[in-house]
Length: 366
Ligand code: NAD
Ligand code: GLY
Image (cartoon, rainbow, N blue to C red; front, side, top):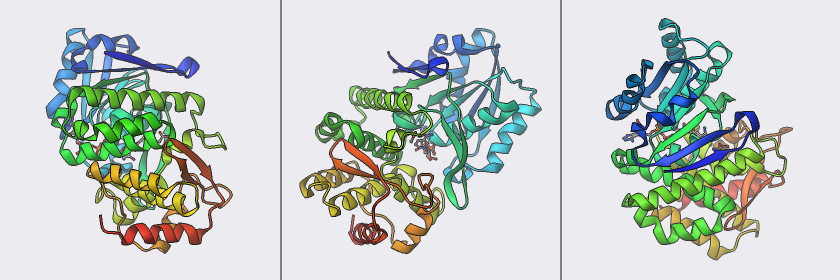
Protein backbone atom coordinates (compact mmCIF):
# COMPACT_ATOMS: atom_id res chain seq x y z
CA UNK A 1 0.00 0.00 0.00
CA UNK A 2 1.15 3.56 -0.76
CA UNK A 3 -0.10 6.53 1.20
CA UNK A 4 -0.03 10.10 -0.14
CA UNK A 5 -1.11 13.21 1.68
CA UNK A 6 -3.27 16.09 0.49
CA UNK A 7 -1.74 18.99 2.42
CA UNK A 8 -4.52 21.40 3.36
CA UNK A 9 -3.59 22.39 6.92
CA UNK A 10 -6.39 21.31 9.28
CA UNK A 11 -8.26 19.73 6.34
CA UNK A 12 -5.32 17.54 5.27
CA UNK A 13 -6.08 13.90 4.54
CA UNK A 14 -4.48 10.67 3.38
CA UNK A 15 -4.96 8.89 0.07
CA UNK A 16 -4.33 5.15 0.53
CA UNK A 17 -3.67 3.21 -2.69
CA UNK A 18 -3.35 -0.56 -2.98
CA UNK A 19 -5.05 -3.85 -3.80
CA UNK A 20 -7.78 -5.23 -1.50
CA UNK A 21 -7.97 -2.15 0.69
CA UNK A 22 -11.75 -2.59 0.94
CA UNK A 23 -11.04 -5.19 3.64
CA UNK A 24 -8.80 -2.88 5.65
CA UNK A 25 -11.19 -1.38 8.19
CA UNK A 26 -8.24 0.16 10.03
CA UNK A 27 -7.90 2.69 7.19
CA UNK A 28 -11.41 3.98 7.88
CA UNK A 29 -12.00 3.50 11.60
CA UNK A 30 -9.62 6.27 12.81
CA UNK A 31 -11.60 8.82 10.77
CA UNK A 32 -15.00 8.08 12.34
CA UNK A 33 -16.09 10.57 14.97
CA UNK A 34 -18.86 8.22 16.16
CA UNK A 35 -19.45 4.49 15.51
CA UNK A 36 -22.04 5.26 12.83
CA UNK A 37 -21.69 5.36 9.05
CA UNK A 38 -24.01 6.10 6.13
CA UNK A 39 -22.69 4.17 3.14
CA UNK A 40 -23.81 5.63 -0.18
CA UNK A 41 -23.37 3.52 -3.30
CA UNK A 42 -25.36 2.58 -6.38
CA UNK A 43 -27.26 -0.45 -7.58
CA UNK A 44 -24.29 -1.69 -9.66
CA UNK A 45 -21.43 -1.20 -7.20
CA UNK A 46 -23.24 -2.08 -3.96
CA UNK A 47 -23.82 -5.77 -4.80
CA UNK A 48 -20.15 -6.08 -5.79
CA UNK A 49 -18.41 -4.34 -2.92
CA UNK A 50 -20.60 -2.80 -0.22
CA UNK A 51 -20.71 -5.73 2.19
CA UNK A 52 -16.95 -6.27 1.88
CA UNK A 53 -16.34 -2.66 2.85
CA UNK A 54 -18.92 -2.90 5.63
CA UNK A 55 -17.72 -6.19 7.19
CA UNK A 56 -14.65 -4.98 9.11
CA UNK A 57 -16.53 -1.89 10.28
CA UNK A 58 -19.47 -3.96 11.55
CA UNK A 59 -16.99 -6.28 13.27
CA UNK A 60 -15.60 -3.20 15.04
CA UNK A 61 -19.08 -2.26 16.30
CA UNK A 62 -19.95 0.39 13.71
CA UNK A 63 -23.65 0.75 12.80
CA UNK A 64 -24.18 1.14 9.04
CA UNK A 65 -27.02 2.70 7.08
CA UNK A 66 -27.03 1.63 3.42
CA UNK A 67 -28.20 4.16 0.83
CA UNK A 68 -28.36 2.74 -2.68
CA UNK A 69 -28.81 5.12 -5.61
CA UNK A 70 -29.86 4.43 -9.19
CA UNK A 71 -26.87 4.14 -11.54
CA UNK A 72 -26.05 6.77 -14.13
CA UNK A 73 -24.92 10.28 -14.89
CA UNK A 74 -28.53 11.26 -15.54
CA UNK A 75 -29.27 10.66 -11.85
CA UNK A 76 -26.66 13.20 -10.72
CA UNK A 77 -29.43 15.67 -9.97
CA UNK A 78 -31.54 17.33 -7.27
CA UNK A 79 -33.95 14.41 -6.96
CA UNK A 80 -31.22 11.91 -6.17
CA UNK A 81 -29.46 14.35 -3.87
CA UNK A 82 -32.75 14.83 -2.06
CA UNK A 83 -33.18 11.06 -1.76
CA UNK A 84 -29.86 10.89 0.11
CA UNK A 85 -30.98 13.66 2.49
CA UNK A 86 -34.29 11.83 2.95
CA UNK A 87 -32.53 8.60 3.86
CA UNK A 88 -30.14 10.36 6.25
CA UNK A 89 -33.10 11.98 7.99
CA UNK A 90 -35.24 8.83 8.00
CA UNK A 91 -32.49 6.95 9.81
CA UNK A 92 -31.74 9.86 12.16
CA UNK A 93 -28.16 10.28 11.01
CA UNK A 94 -26.43 13.02 12.91
CA UNK A 95 -23.97 15.71 11.95
CA UNK A 96 -21.13 13.57 13.32
CA UNK A 97 -22.19 10.46 11.40
CA UNK A 98 -19.63 9.74 8.66
CA UNK A 99 -20.83 9.34 5.08
CA UNK A 100 -18.82 6.93 2.94
CA UNK A 101 -19.11 7.24 -0.85
CA UNK A 102 -18.50 3.88 -2.56
CA UNK A 103 -18.54 4.05 -6.35
CA UNK A 104 -17.47 6.09 -9.34
CA UNK A 105 -17.41 9.84 -9.80
CA UNK A 106 -21.19 10.13 -9.94
CA UNK A 107 -21.66 8.56 -6.51
CA UNK A 108 -18.65 10.48 -5.17
CA UNK A 109 -19.86 13.88 -6.40
CA UNK A 110 -23.47 13.31 -5.30
CA UNK A 111 -22.67 11.78 -1.92
CA UNK A 112 -19.97 14.36 -1.29
CA UNK A 113 -22.46 17.17 -1.95
CA UNK A 114 -25.00 15.47 0.32
CA UNK A 115 -22.31 15.35 3.03
CA UNK A 116 -21.43 19.02 2.44
CA UNK A 117 -25.05 20.09 2.87
CA UNK A 118 -26.63 17.68 5.38
CA UNK A 119 -26.95 19.55 8.69
CA UNK A 120 -24.49 22.09 7.18
CA UNK A 121 -21.81 19.49 6.73
CA UNK A 122 -20.93 15.98 7.89
CA UNK A 123 -17.60 14.17 7.52
CA UNK A 124 -17.16 11.95 4.50
CA UNK A 125 -14.75 9.41 3.08
CA UNK A 126 -14.22 8.55 -0.58
CA UNK A 127 -13.88 4.92 -1.66
CA UNK A 128 -13.65 5.25 -5.46
CA UNK A 129 -14.18 2.19 -7.67
CA UNK A 130 -13.72 3.50 -11.23
CA UNK A 131 -10.40 4.44 -12.79
CA UNK A 132 -11.73 7.96 -13.34
CA UNK A 133 -12.64 8.35 -9.70
CA UNK A 134 -9.36 6.80 -8.51
CA UNK A 135 -7.17 9.08 -10.63
CA UNK A 136 -9.19 12.26 -10.29
CA UNK A 137 -12.64 12.81 -8.86
CA UNK A 138 -12.21 11.30 -5.38
CA UNK A 139 -9.36 13.68 -4.57
CA UNK A 140 -9.75 17.41 -4.11
CA UNK A 141 -13.16 17.96 -2.60
CA UNK A 142 -15.19 19.08 -5.61
CA UNK A 143 -18.72 17.82 -5.05
CA UNK A 144 -21.95 18.60 -6.84
CA UNK A 145 -24.72 17.80 -9.25
CA UNK A 146 -25.64 18.68 -12.83
CA UNK A 147 -28.20 21.29 -13.87
CA UNK A 148 -30.16 20.72 -17.09
CA UNK A 149 -28.39 23.80 -18.47
CA UNK A 150 -24.91 22.98 -17.32
CA UNK A 151 -22.69 20.21 -16.03
CA UNK A 152 -21.66 20.33 -12.34
CA UNK A 153 -23.31 23.73 -12.00
CA UNK A 154 -24.45 23.28 -8.40
CA UNK A 155 -22.07 22.10 -5.73
CA UNK A 156 -19.58 22.79 -2.99
CA UNK A 157 -15.95 22.34 -2.10
CA UNK A 158 -16.01 19.77 0.69
CA UNK A 159 -12.89 17.77 1.39
CA UNK A 160 -13.07 14.11 2.39
CA UNK A 161 -11.40 12.91 5.60
CA UNK A 162 -9.66 10.12 3.70
CA UNK A 163 -9.57 8.51 0.26
CA UNK A 164 -9.24 4.71 0.19
CA UNK A 165 -8.42 3.39 -3.29
CA UNK A 166 -8.69 -0.36 -3.82
CA UNK A 167 -7.17 -0.83 -7.27
CA UNK A 168 -8.46 -4.43 -7.42
CA UNK A 169 -12.00 -3.08 -7.88
CA UNK A 170 -10.96 -2.10 -11.41
CA UNK A 171 -11.10 -5.78 -12.39
CA UNK A 172 -14.90 -5.58 -12.68
CA UNK A 173 -15.05 -2.23 -14.44
CA UNK A 174 -16.52 -2.38 -17.97
CA UNK A 175 -13.91 -1.73 -20.67
CA UNK A 176 -15.63 1.43 -21.90
CA UNK A 177 -15.45 2.85 -18.36
CA UNK A 178 -11.77 1.90 -18.06
CA UNK A 179 -11.05 3.86 -21.25
CA UNK A 180 -13.06 6.82 -19.95
CA UNK A 181 -10.80 6.92 -16.90
CA UNK A 182 -7.75 7.03 -19.14
CA UNK A 183 -8.96 10.37 -20.50
CA UNK A 184 -8.25 11.96 -17.10
CA UNK A 185 -4.89 10.19 -16.89
CA UNK A 186 -3.90 11.61 -20.28
CA UNK A 187 -5.17 15.03 -19.17
CA UNK A 188 -3.04 14.91 -16.03
CA UNK A 189 0.03 14.07 -18.10
CA UNK A 190 -0.65 16.80 -20.62
CA UNK A 191 -1.05 19.64 -18.15
CA UNK A 192 1.99 19.02 -15.93
CA UNK A 193 3.74 15.66 -16.29
CA UNK A 194 5.57 15.04 -19.55
CA UNK A 195 7.31 11.89 -18.20
CA UNK A 196 3.86 10.47 -17.47
CA UNK A 197 2.83 11.26 -21.06
CA UNK A 198 5.86 9.34 -22.36
CA UNK A 199 5.16 6.50 -19.92
CA UNK A 200 1.58 6.36 -21.24
CA UNK A 201 2.81 6.14 -24.83
CA UNK A 202 4.86 3.10 -23.79
CA UNK A 203 2.33 1.51 -21.42
CA UNK A 204 -1.18 2.32 -22.60
CA UNK A 205 -1.72 -1.28 -23.75
CA UNK A 206 -0.73 -2.56 -20.29
CA UNK A 207 -3.34 -0.26 -18.76
CA UNK A 208 -5.99 -1.48 -21.18
CA UNK A 209 -4.99 -5.04 -20.28
CA UNK A 210 -5.48 -4.06 -16.60
CA UNK A 211 -2.00 -5.09 -15.53
CA UNK A 212 -2.12 -4.38 -11.79
CA UNK A 213 1.35 -2.77 -11.63
CA UNK A 214 0.56 -0.42 -14.49
CA UNK A 215 -2.81 0.58 -13.03
CA UNK A 216 -1.32 1.14 -9.58
CA UNK A 217 1.44 3.30 -11.09
CA UNK A 218 -1.03 5.44 -13.06
CA UNK A 219 -3.35 5.88 -10.06
CA UNK A 220 -0.53 6.85 -7.74
CA UNK A 221 1.08 9.23 -10.23
CA UNK A 222 -2.23 10.98 -10.95
CA UNK A 223 -3.14 11.23 -7.27
CA UNK A 224 0.30 12.69 -6.55
CA UNK A 225 -0.21 15.31 -9.26
CA UNK A 226 -3.73 16.09 -8.13
CA UNK A 227 -2.74 16.35 -4.46
CA UNK A 228 -0.05 18.88 -5.38
CA UNK A 229 -2.41 20.95 -7.52
CA UNK A 230 -5.18 20.96 -4.91
CA UNK A 231 -2.80 21.80 -2.06
CA UNK A 232 -1.57 24.82 -4.03
CA UNK A 233 -4.99 26.11 -5.16
CA UNK A 234 -7.80 24.35 -3.31
CA UNK A 235 -10.65 26.55 -4.56
CA UNK A 236 -9.44 27.28 -8.07
CA UNK A 237 -8.65 30.90 -7.31
CA UNK A 238 -5.22 31.13 -8.95
CA UNK A 239 -5.61 33.51 -11.90
CA UNK A 240 -2.60 32.00 -13.62
CA UNK A 241 -4.32 28.63 -13.91
CA UNK A 242 -3.54 26.53 -10.84
CA UNK A 243 -6.33 24.04 -10.22
CA UNK A 244 -8.22 25.27 -13.29
CA UNK A 245 -5.58 23.58 -15.45
CA UNK A 246 -7.15 20.27 -14.40
CA UNK A 247 -10.02 21.33 -16.64
CA UNK A 248 -8.10 20.81 -19.88
CA UNK A 249 -10.68 19.63 -22.42
CA UNK A 250 -13.53 20.09 -19.96
CA UNK A 251 -15.10 23.27 -21.36
CA UNK A 252 -15.63 21.46 -24.66
CA UNK A 253 -16.36 18.17 -22.87
CA UNK A 254 -19.02 19.63 -20.62
CA UNK A 255 -20.67 21.22 -23.68
CA UNK A 256 -20.78 17.76 -25.28
CA UNK A 257 -22.31 16.16 -22.18
CA UNK A 258 -24.91 18.88 -21.69
CA UNK A 259 -25.61 19.24 -25.41
CA UNK A 260 -26.22 15.53 -26.00
CA UNK A 261 -27.96 14.88 -22.66
CA UNK A 262 -26.21 13.51 -19.59
CA UNK A 263 -24.98 9.96 -19.95
CA UNK A 264 -25.11 9.73 -23.76
CA UNK A 265 -21.35 10.15 -23.91
CA UNK A 266 -19.41 9.18 -20.79
CA UNK A 267 -17.70 12.04 -19.01
CA UNK A 268 -14.27 10.63 -19.90
CA UNK A 269 -15.22 10.28 -23.56
CA UNK A 270 -16.37 13.89 -23.68
CA UNK A 271 -13.16 15.00 -21.95
CA UNK A 272 -11.11 13.04 -24.51
CA UNK A 273 -12.84 14.71 -27.45
CA UNK A 274 -12.57 18.07 -25.62
CA UNK A 275 -8.84 17.49 -25.13
CA UNK A 276 -8.51 16.79 -28.85
CA UNK A 277 -10.29 20.09 -29.63
CA UNK A 278 -8.11 22.00 -27.13
CA UNK A 279 -5.05 20.37 -28.73
CA UNK A 280 -6.18 21.44 -32.19
CA UNK A 281 -6.79 24.99 -30.98
CA UNK A 282 -3.39 25.13 -29.27
CA UNK A 283 -1.78 24.05 -32.56
CA UNK A 284 -3.84 26.52 -34.58
CA UNK A 285 -2.61 29.35 -32.36
CA UNK A 286 0.98 28.25 -32.94
CA UNK A 287 1.52 27.16 -29.33
CA UNK A 288 1.85 23.42 -29.96
CA UNK A 289 3.87 21.74 -32.71
CA UNK A 290 1.95 19.60 -35.20
CA UNK A 291 4.05 16.57 -34.24
CA UNK A 292 3.08 17.00 -30.58
CA UNK A 293 -0.60 17.49 -31.49
CA UNK A 294 -0.42 14.27 -33.47
CA UNK A 295 1.10 12.44 -30.49
CA UNK A 296 -1.81 13.60 -28.30
CA UNK A 297 -4.40 12.46 -30.84
CA UNK A 298 -2.65 9.12 -31.30
CA UNK A 299 -2.55 8.42 -27.56
CA UNK A 300 -6.22 9.32 -27.11
CA UNK A 301 -7.16 7.03 -30.00
CA UNK A 302 -4.99 4.18 -28.69
CA UNK A 303 -6.85 4.45 -25.38
CA UNK A 304 -10.04 3.69 -27.31
CA UNK A 305 -11.35 7.22 -26.89
CA UNK A 306 -12.82 9.67 -29.42
CA UNK A 307 -10.58 12.32 -31.00
CA UNK A 308 -13.52 14.22 -32.44
CA UNK A 309 -16.70 15.56 -30.90
CA UNK A 310 -20.31 15.13 -31.97
CA UNK A 311 -21.51 17.55 -34.64
CA UNK A 312 -23.52 19.90 -32.47
CA UNK A 313 -22.37 22.89 -34.54
CA UNK A 314 -19.75 25.36 -33.34
CA UNK A 315 -22.41 27.94 -32.38
CA UNK A 316 -24.12 25.43 -30.06
CA UNK A 317 -20.79 24.48 -28.48
CA UNK A 318 -20.03 28.15 -27.84
CA UNK A 319 -23.51 28.78 -26.45
CA UNK A 320 -23.13 25.90 -23.99
CA UNK A 321 -19.59 26.98 -23.11
CA UNK A 322 -20.80 30.44 -22.07
CA UNK A 323 -22.08 28.75 -18.87
CA UNK A 324 -18.62 27.33 -18.12
CA UNK A 325 -17.46 27.92 -14.53
CA UNK A 326 -14.25 29.47 -15.85
CA UNK A 327 -16.17 32.30 -17.54
CA UNK A 328 -15.09 35.53 -15.78
CA UNK A 329 -16.40 39.03 -16.50
CA UNK A 330 -18.31 37.46 -19.38
CA UNK A 331 -15.13 36.15 -21.02
CA UNK A 332 -14.53 32.52 -21.79
CA UNK A 333 -11.29 31.22 -20.32
CA UNK A 334 -9.80 28.09 -21.82
CA UNK A 335 -7.05 25.71 -20.83
CA UNK A 336 -4.66 25.24 -23.74
CA UNK A 337 -1.35 23.48 -24.27
CA UNK A 338 2.01 25.14 -24.85
CA UNK A 339 3.79 21.79 -24.95
CA UNK A 340 3.41 18.20 -23.79
CA UNK A 341 3.19 18.57 -20.01
CA UNK A 342 2.65 22.35 -20.14
CA UNK A 343 -0.71 24.13 -20.03
CA UNK A 344 -1.97 27.69 -19.56
CA UNK A 345 -5.31 29.33 -18.88
CA UNK A 346 -6.12 32.03 -21.40
CA UNK A 347 -8.97 34.47 -21.95
CA UNK A 348 -7.61 35.94 -25.14
CA UNK A 349 -8.67 33.49 -27.82
CA UNK A 350 -11.00 34.81 -30.54
CA UNK A 351 -14.29 32.95 -30.85
CA UNK A 352 -13.59 32.51 -34.57
CA UNK A 353 -10.49 30.46 -33.73
CA UNK A 354 -12.38 28.41 -31.15
CA UNK A 355 -15.15 27.76 -33.68
CA UNK A 356 -12.60 26.78 -36.33
CA UNK A 357 -10.99 24.24 -33.99
CA UNK A 358 -14.40 22.81 -33.08
CA UNK A 359 -15.41 22.54 -36.73
CA UNK A 360 -12.13 20.95 -37.66
CA UNK A 361 -12.28 18.32 -34.89
CA UNK A 362 -15.94 17.59 -35.24
CA UNK A 363 -15.66 16.94 -38.96
CA UNK A 364 -12.76 14.54 -38.64
CA UNK A 365 -13.69 10.84 -38.53
CA UNK A 366 -12.51 9.01 -35.41
P1 NAD B 1 -19.72 6.67 -12.89
O1 NAD B 1 -19.65 7.07 -11.51
O2 NAD B 1 -21.01 6.80 -13.64
O3 NAD B 1 -19.23 5.14 -13.00
C1 NAD B 1 -19.18 4.53 -14.25
C2 NAD B 1 -19.97 3.22 -14.29
O4 NAD B 1 -19.18 2.19 -13.70
C3 NAD B 1 -21.27 3.24 -13.52
O5 NAD B 1 -22.21 2.47 -14.21
C4 NAD B 1 -20.90 2.56 -12.21
O6 NAD B 1 -21.99 1.99 -11.55
C5 NAD B 1 -19.93 1.53 -12.68
N1 NAD B 1 -18.93 1.07 -11.73
C6 NAD B 1 -18.27 1.80 -10.82
N2 NAD B 1 -17.30 1.07 -10.24
C7 NAD B 1 -17.39 -0.16 -10.78
C8 NAD B 1 -16.64 -1.34 -10.60
N3 NAD B 1 -15.58 -1.40 -9.81
N4 NAD B 1 -17.02 -2.44 -11.28
C9 NAD B 1 -18.06 -2.40 -12.14
N5 NAD B 1 -18.76 -1.28 -12.39
C10 NAD B 1 -18.43 -0.17 -11.71
O7 NAD B 1 -18.65 7.45 -13.81
P2 NAD B 1 -17.16 7.96 -13.49
O8 NAD B 1 -16.49 7.99 -14.80
O9 NAD B 1 -16.55 7.24 -12.38
O10 NAD B 1 -17.39 9.46 -12.97
C11 NAD B 1 -17.88 10.46 -13.83
C12 NAD B 1 -18.36 11.61 -12.99
O11 NAD B 1 -17.27 12.14 -12.24
C13 NAD B 1 -18.92 12.76 -13.79
O12 NAD B 1 -20.15 13.15 -13.25
C14 NAD B 1 -17.90 13.86 -13.63
O13 NAD B 1 -18.47 15.13 -13.69
C15 NAD B 1 -17.34 13.56 -12.28
N6 NAD B 1 -15.99 14.10 -12.03
C16 NAD B 1 -15.79 14.78 -10.88
C17 NAD B 1 -14.55 15.27 -10.59
C18 NAD B 1 -14.30 15.97 -9.29
O14 NAD B 1 -13.21 16.53 -9.11
N7 NAD B 1 -15.23 15.94 -8.37
C19 NAD B 1 -13.47 15.08 -11.48
C20 NAD B 1 -13.72 14.35 -12.64
C21 NAD B 1 -14.99 13.86 -12.92
N1 GLY C 1 -11.40 17.62 -12.00
C1 GLY C 1 -11.14 19.00 -11.80
C2 GLY C 1 -10.77 19.37 -10.41
O1 GLY C 1 -10.80 18.56 -9.52
O2 GLY C 1 -10.45 20.49 -10.19
